[in-house]
Image (tube, rainbow, N blue to C red; front, side, top):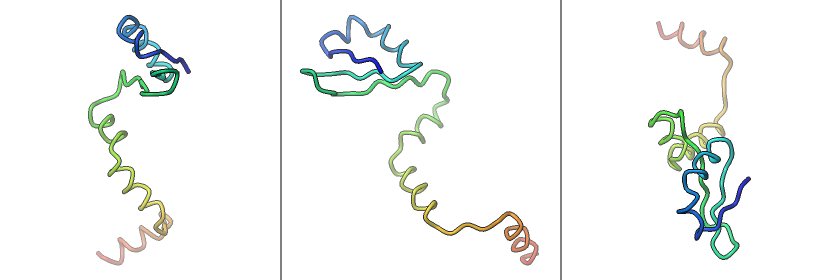
Length: 82
């Protein structure tokens, strides 16, 4: 993981963006992490928005806590409804 001081960011922005496509770049202020640059080249807008939406991830976490059923059980339930 590369680190870049905020004062150098403007001079090295192109290089930082290029490096962020392969790994994260930490922007530091007074030696402490202040921001994280993550490459998103090749991703579509919908994926990008969902990956960074806290509400979406909260829904995913809540759903993962719920019990699951097998595919066989799902098919049986669907056939009963017909």
